[in-house]
Every structure is written in C-alpha cells, then in structure tokens.
Amino acid sequence: MKKIFSVVKRFVAETDKVLTLLIVAASVFGILAVYSATRYTLEDGQKFSRDALVMFIAAAAGIVIMMIVSAIDYELIMKLWPLIGAFCFVLMIVTLLFGAAPESRPDSRCWLAIGPIYFQSSELLKIGFIITFSMHLDLINDAVNKPRNLLLLAIHAAIPIGLVVLTGDMGSALVFILIAIAMLFLGGVKLSLFAAGGVLLLAASPLVWMFVFNDFQKNRFLALLRPEDFPAESYQQLKGLNALGSGGFFGQGIFKGAYTQSGLVPESQNDMIFTVIGEETGFFGCLCALALLFLIVWKMYSIGKKARDFSTQLVCWGMAAMITAQVIINIGMCLMVLPVIGITLPFFSAGGSSTLCLYIGLGLVLSIARFNKSREMVNFRLSHISTPFSEF
Image (tube, rainbow, N blue to C red; front, side, top):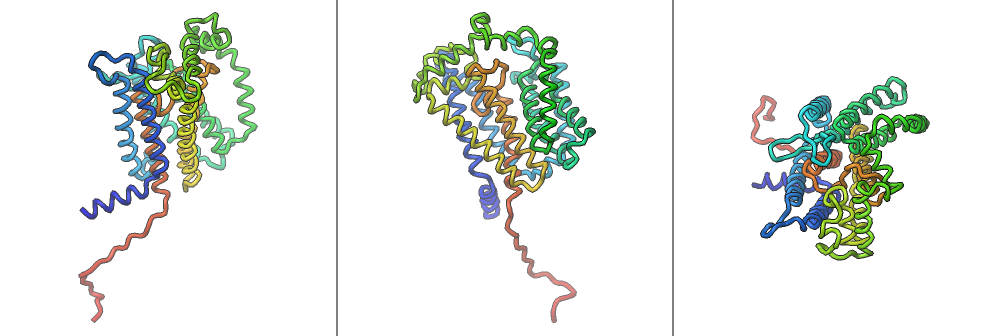
C-alpha cells in the first residue's frame, strides 16, 4: 500500500498542476456553456441534452486519457511517429471512402459513423500531424532552409491538408495550414521565404476563388461585405452579434439569455458558443474565457521552451498554435469578421471527437513537462547478499 501511495504521490508531484487546473477550469466553463446553449431543447423530464451529455462524458474521459498519456514517457510516443503518421493517413482514407456527412452539409464527408457515435477523423489527424511534422523538422534542423528540405516539408504538410480538403472540410484545412506555418516559423525557416509564399498566395487567390471554392463557400465570404444580399448566409452571424451585444458587461445571467434560451442563434452550442458566453456572462465572462485560453497557450509555450529536445519543443508549440488558430477563427466568425467555416472553440464548443483528441494532445504536452523535470536519485540498497568478495 505504501508503494502505491508513493507512486501516486510522485505522479501528482511531477504533474504540471497549473496547466492541469487551467484545462479543468476551461472544461467546466465549456460544459456549463453547452448545457445552457441546449436547455431550450429539453423535453419534459429530460435533464440533459445529448450535446451537453456528450460534452460532459468527452471532457471527463478526455481528462482521464490526458493523465494516462502524461504518465507515458514522451520519448516512447515520439519514436512511434511513423506508425502514428501511417495510422492517421489510413484513417483519413477510410473517411474519404466511407465517411458520413451532416444533413446541412452533404458535401462535407468528415465523420466516421461508428454505431451511434460520429468521429471526426481530422481532429486526430491534427495531433498526428503535429507529432510527425515536429520529427521531420527535428531531423533536418539546421538544414531547414535548403530547397530540397523545404520541398519535402511542403509535401509533408500538403498531404494532410489535401486529404482534409477532399473530405470537404475547408475550415480544418485552414487550421492545418496555420499550424504548419507556425511550426515552420518556429522551426527556423527564413522570414523572406514566408514573404515569398505570401506573394504567391495572393497571386493564386483568384484561382482559388474560381476553382476551389463552391458557391456556398463564396456566399459565406460575400455575406460579410453585403449581409443584406445574402440573408440566409448572414442570419447566423447577425443573430450571434445581437446576442453578444445584448450581454453588456456582466451579461443577462446564466440560463437567462433571451437569444440563447430561445434558440435564435443556430448552432450556438458549436460554432457560435462564444455568443452564449457573451450574452449570459457578458464582456467579463468573455474576458475570463479568453484569459483561460491565453494562459493555457502560454503555459504550453513555456513548457516547450524548457524542453530538452527540439522535436518536443515543436510539439508543444504546434499544440499552442492549433489552439490559437482555432480561437482566432472561431471568435472571428462570431464577430462577423471571418466567414463561418465550422471551426470549434477549444474546450467550449460541443463535440465529442474534437474534445477527446484535444486532450490526447494535451496529455503529450504534460508528458513533456513531466519527463523534462529533474528527478531525484533513487537509492537502492541491497542486503544479505553473499559474494566471493566478502571481507573476512
């Protein structure tokens, strides 16, 4: 019993408590927001909506999985990067062949239907991509700016991005692009090359508009400029802005938001969860949510700076970039400065697969924090051992 107690005590002592508490706080805040956003759907006698229940189970299971992953030496996980990459690639191919699409977006086959459960493969692909791209950058390290290495890195990033685009999930593809750019920058790629890439992107933007975006996606962009001409596409964001504005500084109160509790903002539990926070907890609640997210990202960046291995530094920074990208895009959607592209707000938006996969990545960051700490020497003392060299 003492041995079990000492193991648990050591596990707790070596866990990054600040990051863990921040994650738990953000998760609780998110569960409460999703519950409030879906209360209007409850029928007589029903206590929890399906989205709220899935969110609670995913967060609870995710925290357990996160702690289990954090107990595994990150070096073992990183050594498995070829298998992780191959598994994620096969998973995306299976999704392309047998994926399911929501009724509202029949062109987006992003989910695998496993009985009653729907799993979004691209969420796990994000974690796999961060691991494999980190290892790739570590392997070439000082030679990252050589043309051949840059070409191989571009191909590496293009594979998951292309697979996600083929499933119809343009929003996730944008997140992958931003993760890759952040990791390339932190990996030592010259700024002049980013400038050149930006010029090429601007030059190619008309071709992307004409041949990549479909009419639905184009209308989402045009609705930002002329919402009155695209009432169907702008409805969700306009209602979301009204909900945010009605919250004032301290909000209308939990479970008391007029827009939220009447369901006037479509998908308020998913893409537009920030409008729920704004309406019911006000500007103060929005600041609290953003502060939690900022502190989580900053803590991950700090863990990365202290990591001994370049690859694990990049894993921490890649995870921080993923969360940052999703926060910026999601809030931009809610503020109607970016089109709605189906990106969730980490820890807050409803979604079982996105929540679980996020915690897997966080578990790896906690493992890096744990196994980069200086450990005390263990004193092994052997007694009653007979050897030919015993003193007489």
